Amino acid sequence: QVQLAESGGGLVQPGGSLRLSCTASGTFVKINIMAWYRQAPGKERELVARFISDGRTNYAASVTGRFTISMDNAKNTAYLQMNYLKPDDTAVYYCYTNAYYWTTGSVDYWGQGSQVTVSS
Image 1 (tube, helix red, strand yellow):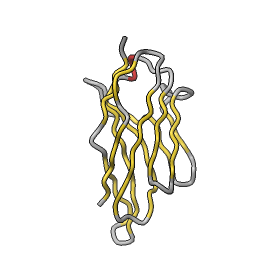
Image 2: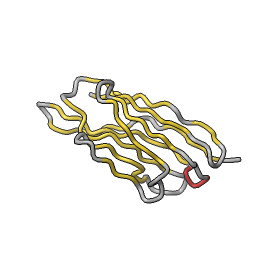
Image 3: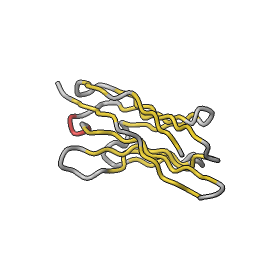
Image 4: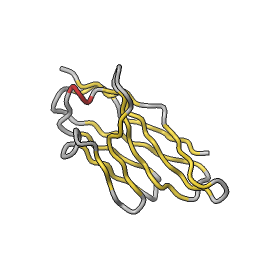
């Protein structure tokens, strides 16, 4: 079992910045992927950014150049630095992880979600 502890959401003005963090804890062998997804009212959940264990990263086209995902492997913590925020970035941001176990293989987990509101 993995527990995901998220923090860092809130209200920010357009053009501002926020940093989300997500810490995974549990008895897994390794973290394969950590990522953030977001879901705005009336829209489907979408991938924002993903950090893969080999160091590769992926970003949604809408956030490329503004958001940066990073990983502190020693702390099993991922960070999403969000700069130049726009009202369209308003959504609930969910932390996601794929963790590996010797007995069951890879398992997906979701955090509880953090509200990010960009408004003047």
